Image (tube, rainbow, N blue to C red; front, side, top):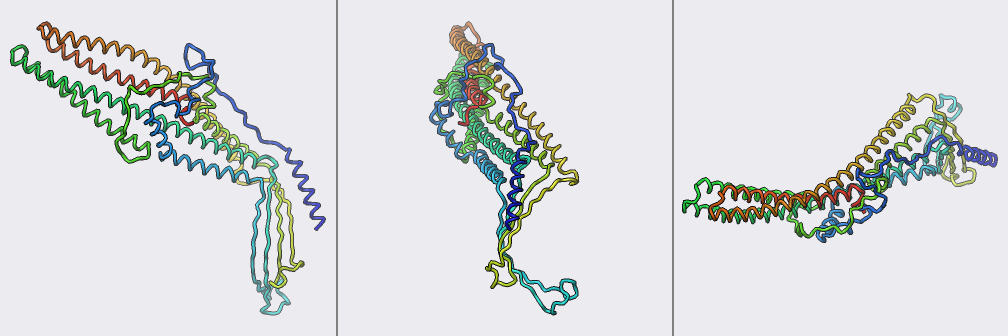
Length: 467
């Protein structure tokens, strides 16, 4: 037994020396694209970014904050992402245990009746039987000489971090979707008020034009034209109210609710106090969950390539067993029933129907695909930030122009009505001015909505919303 112990110690010494044999590579983070700015004239040097704000401090509407909090707690996609994270966490724990030995305990009772016509049973009286009682434990351990188990652990950890960032991405998208639809409801409320007010004015206009027809000032054509304008506004109101119900249903689904009405504030109360800082492009690599998830997916594929490569090298393992073994229960717990075995194994794959080589080739191809996915995600991230900035700037300019247009049209309506009363303008000029004014007012609301949604999109594009 002492000699056996010496041999085991010697084998362990050899194993410790062979641990220095390193064949696997270490992952090195790279930035596949160098970008100074997001196609802006000004090159950003300040690292302050909208993504640094938590959503609770980014949005100011108390009702919106309440809905976001509810959505993060009850949204089904968020709940599913949380369970996916639990799954990958369990795999990480399993991978970490890969360095530990497998230990099993067992017990068994058997009875052997040998055949007297065989070599082993010859000379034994007919009907003789032997009992075999076993109670013991076994151990097996693989030495991670080539880093295969270590790479498996790194791959599992990368998968966990990828899933964690996918969960963050789901949260960020949910926050943006809730804000997006909330602002859309506020805009529809504003449109409904404007159209309802227009219907009242056009109803009065129809009454007025009918009185003018009776007085012989205008013809029946003028009456029908005014009625058509009224019907158009009424149909628009029906469309807006229908859209409100549909958006409320979608909003309820985001919150994990059944379809219901959504209490809300007003469009004019929505303000953002933060400066629209975007930071420097390199920050996207650390802020955006989808970019981080894509990189961790690349790390996972990289480490699995290491695993496939290491699997082609020899496997060195130790197996051992100890316990009690006896032909009868009465002698089972005596010293003479003790047994122990220790075995060292060195296994080199030679021919395995090409499985190991195929695994390595597939792993390398998957690593390449993961790298292209990573690059594509970064390109998409840069593009989304640039698009949001251009949209915001264009929207701001358009809003100023549209407000000037609205002021001009309001004056045009006043002047047209005065001239019509004096018989110096026909009814068509008045109708055209009113119709243009309504369309411009609705366009202003659309621009106000786009402004809020663009700021929210920029916040998400920079990597905000999940904190």
